[in-house]
Amino acid sequence: MDFRRCVYRRLLGPGGGDGRFHPSGGSVRHMQVVFADPGKQLRLSGGLSPLQAMGVAGSMSFVLIAQGEGTRLMYRYEVGGYTAGGLAALAGPVDQVQLGQLNRLKAYVEE
Image (tube, rainbow, N blue to C red; front, side, top):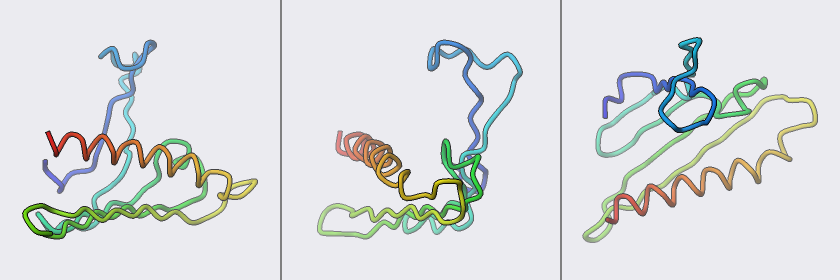
């Protein structure tokens, strides 16, 4: 993976993940790499999903630590800023989405 580039994904058309791209040819930037130390640490900046439309800033960090014969992954996603109604109501749903993604990553690397 080339961490020097921003992470972009083209918008999918109707039907979601069936491989068809949005007719407008649009794209979305999820996060931007702001620090990379290969094999040790990766830090990204940006908002995911609904957070992109809010007055917030987010920082996502991955730290890899050798542990016995394996590797421990430490993960943190911090978001701060303003949105009408506050951010507290979003914390639980965002945590659940992130936990699901981390569990899929864990299953993938343990195959």
